[in-house]
Image (cartoon, rainbow over all chains, first blue to last red; front, side, top):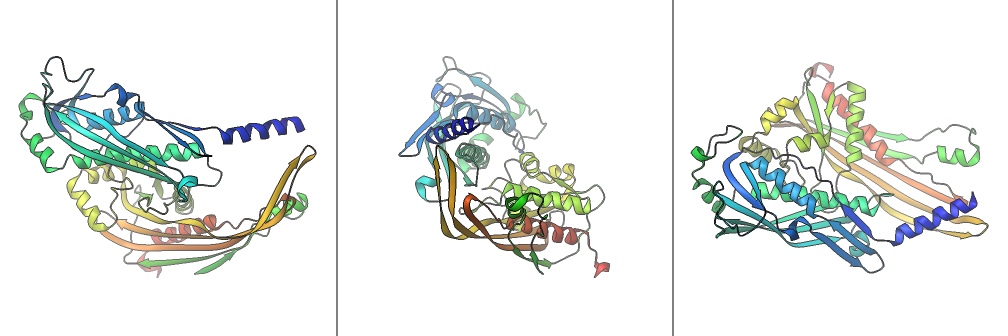
Length: 212
Length: 228
């Protein structure tokens, strides 16, 4: 019995010394927005699809956040919920122009940062993700870009593992990225481009929403 | 309204250590209410309780929001939509950085989006926002623990004060009005003496605040003008 207790103690101590790995949930809610009757293509680069953030903090171990699959899932849910037709393309610039798409959206991560309570003296875990959203014409020529800054936090809780706290903070940041993306659709330059697209006849909305 | 909550405990069934563990420390609670109007939760209508998560220094705990919802349902039978279900159904309009902080913001949201249809489909009319948290305000004492091949033991004495402060604001989105506020403030001191084994005597301030707030919210939601 005593030997088992010591073994348990050793396991707990070793668990405290090793790094923290964050693997995120891939389910995100569909946004409650009026569908924009427009056909778009989206391109996720290999870097974007497999993005992982590794941070070593002195005396605190290594923190690894596997973001790639989760952020692809987030943008898939967002885009399919916002536009009437979304197609994922495997190469960019496209070899041939995308005939059915009005444009190509390319999200990319500019910066990922995390802070832990032991490191900052604050009692919260925080995550920042800076995205750059780029919009291209079907032939791959650049139209516009806009920044998307996401933030998530979660407070320190007694007996709560730092892994689950950091996972929650990252999940909140990704949901915030989705919220900022939806709010960003209202910016004048993008609205102007959206309203200039001849969408009503070519790409009818799945939801039956009237084009604006 | 001021209440002092102390457990009487269950006498010596579990021995001395068990007795200590059964005796939580005392907590003091103050419950307050401001009412602007009487409300009528119709049959089949649900309410939703949502925690505030936008402040940088704290956020309302998910388990506290659940506790208040369970308390209201248990005492009144009023159905409460779980916070996560509500927030997911209205994504992304009730996220920490997008949720309306004032009624004006809620009005704008209702005009710009389809959330009114979604709220009606969920059967929700009243939204209760809870803002606050439970914090340890001060600590004193020290404890030393050691382990050897023959066993482990601790010695010392630690004490800490906790404070739970929560304010619930009740909105009627159909009338675009704030119908009132209920607040709960609970304080308590916890102790942990250790002679060989640490014995925690924890003041359950969060539970006390939850019980006080849910009880008062139940009264707020169910009382009519005739009751006064």
